[in-house]
Image (cartoon, rainbow, N blue to C red; front, side, top):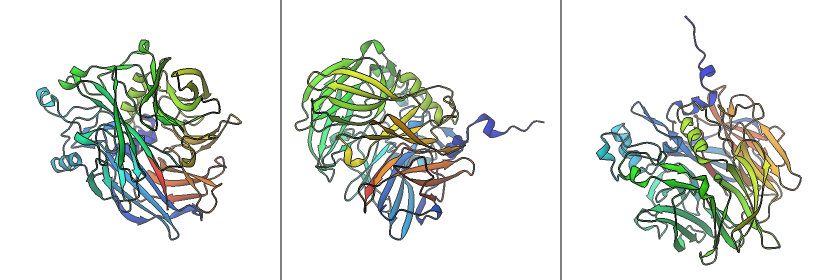
Length: 478
């Protein structure tokens, strides 16, 4: 009888999501190597789908898992960590029933088809976090965020930020102006028409201005960019079989159609009054995430974005992640785009990193400003594009057009790199990533000098339990 090595069938990353994640209370984190930098003071927060199974059933898509937040507090006394599920009303109901009760992005609610008709979706609270002075928001795409305690991550409850009436959606990809403290965000709502809702908040998160813009079709709009004067959106060429969703014949994910002949729409809004400045059209592509944007001295907007050739492949690849095995190639690469904000016309596009990558981020103090370095998660040079998740982080230098990478080695997988500015020396930056080590089935926090990514990490911290692969995080300085 032959014994089959599990790793030969599934990649080591699958073990991180094979079981629902285990929470842990505020715990001192042991240092495995190096030391915590003296000027690294504040909190790393990360959010991601942590439970992909319930009552013996698996979710339909990676986006469907229940959100759990990791907090790592760096103080003079060392580092402490806490990990907790967001206690949404739906999470509590499903925990009680030990069964899935709701539809989400890629799955139906269980039971006969007529029970799915026009049913509310679960708030998975699993995509990102917004750290405000007095609370942490767990963000999702389709409705209000949940507020949590900044220190303990206890769930406080749904939060409408003073203006998100009737469950208005508040996206996972806000932009915070480092100079004014203003926070800009959006949400796409589907009713008798499709609306792009725009929000401007003060530094406490309270919405002080909002507007709604009618779109001529449904498309996944997951992110946008902020410049000194504008909010810039790209609307990928898509359509939705709305009736199929309402009647429960198709999940939200299955109802989305790729329509490249429509072209990608460009929408530019004035950041002062949230009014439309221009709209244009460019070649078809799909994107989840932007890095950053600014206006040059001629008034052109320059931005970077991770582009895919279509939607279907990236969506299928992300669906497969939840099964523990991927087969679909979905190669997003980093591009730089120049456009004229007055006309909405894209003037140039150029691929700057031709390797599979995602999660582009910049130093917080440079959001909406000229910047030199974009940090990304990257498929390592010897990674399998069909079967592997990201196992390297990298820095792209737009000035010298060079890529510096930290390859973490076999069976180690990274999260989106988060940039933290040193409190004692503003010129010094740190990159923090949560690493799943498939060799030991454990999770760690790795800290790199942002200027020396190809050196060993300056510090590695041990986490009490496995943190499943997550989506987005933030750094809140002390």
